Amino acid sequence: MIDAPTKLTGLRPFYVMEITKHSKRLEAAGRSVLHMESGEPGAPPAPAVRAAVAAALDLPQHYTPSAGTLELRLGLVDYYRTQHGVAADPEAMIVTMGSSAAFILAFLGAFGRGARIAVTRPGYPAYLNTLDGLGMEAVEIPVTAGAGWRLTAADVETAYRRQEFEGLLFASPANPTGAAVTREALAEIVEVCRRLGVRFISDEIYHGLDYRGPSASALEFTRDAIIINSFSKYYCMTGWRVGWMVLPADLMDRTMMLQQNLFISAPTLSQVAARVALGERDYSEAQKALYASNRQLLADGLARFDLRAASEGDGAFYAYVDFSRYTNDSLSFCRTLLDEVGVAATPGIDFDRVNGNRFVRFSYAGTRATIEESLNRIGDFLSRR
Image (cartoon, rainbow, N blue to C red; front, side, top):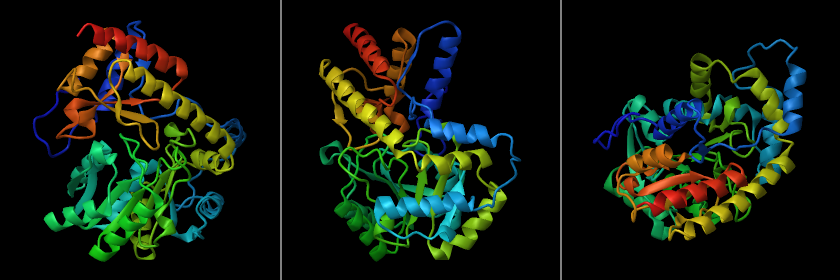
């Protein structure tokens, strides 16, 4: 595996991928590995999704329009109408190769070279690495366990007064903490960004996986924000690499030109699958119910070891756990946990380059059996220390 660099800035490995890579080597050697490291559902897409793709296999797989098929974009219009009560314009949408491509398009479409973009810490590591790769600068706004890992409008304004930035990228629910802000708090964040002249980018890829109630979209409060979403999490389609953006009018032309040249279009079959997935929310809600059960199972199990998630999480499917009583080196801890007892988890330094050495993230998107056996193995592992 790649060693952790001492620098706190610049391009760094995506450590969860390193953990997964090592776990595959162990499995190839005959070892049993329980996977709680990856942020992806264990279930396949809904049966109707798979059937639609099978039926489309004999059709020509040409490029679609760069913005995505009209059928899918109209399906997204219906999604925003039914889930968020807003009228979205299909001509303001771009279907992307997952949210990863959408982040690149958002950064390049809305900002110039060297732009400063604010993100929360802890947060998704690809934010920092993508910004660094594009020659932009991340401004980290720390959020704390005491505040439930939730960002506030006051946090944004304080950070801006300390160091100005052109954009704010914010996820609710968030990775790795599962923290989600209320509808009112999101409206306040949108408003402070408007007042400061900061372009707001709303990462909504965990929408639908909010255990408190319906997720609020920034599109409910403004048409000036960049909205990013994906079929990966709620719709169980990580490997299909399909997501979407809703863009302000002033960014659409430039972002479309970037899409045409960088990606051409999202995969045709994935768009077929995505269109059907939008109508299969009952299936997705059934998966969410399993995650909620797993969430409680994991919380109860960790409590047996006097461990608790710093926040049980309002949404997504992660527990961000303080392991400081056992380690101050989460990368070494996760490597040893994998090597000794075959449990794959993600070191907190993936999400927080300053304080993440005390934390480990577990995904509970897999099966109940995986979590039960993982807890048994973690118990054995901790008893030796």
